[in-house]
Length: 121
Image 1 (spheres, helix red, strand yellow):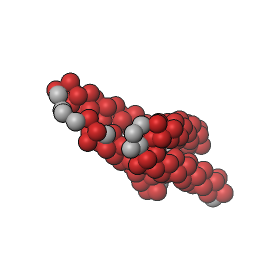
Image 2: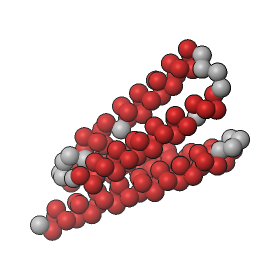
Image 3: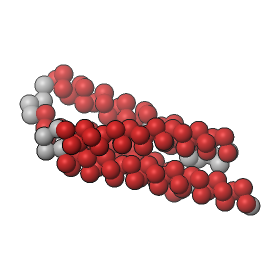
Image 4: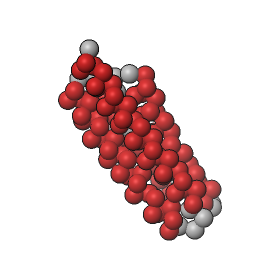
């Protein structure tokens, strides 16, 4: 259970890091940009609450829902890869997105392994 929670927290931290990484590229921080930034950070935290809560349970149905939800997160990170190549100086964003895909995949594999272990016992 701890591994599942840590992977979700690591994914959330990486997503928050990508958003805060873009602060340096914005230039002047107007109140509208600050509000948009805080809303983006809040939305990311809210979107990562369901997989975090589902990580506490070992029910097979909840595990499959968690895998599907985290699959959507992995696809989101995968969708950021071409964006990182398109923006100027976006190679770091592409590398972080690739790292996010890896972490999401590891989280899904961890859920599958713990589900298999609970079925065997």
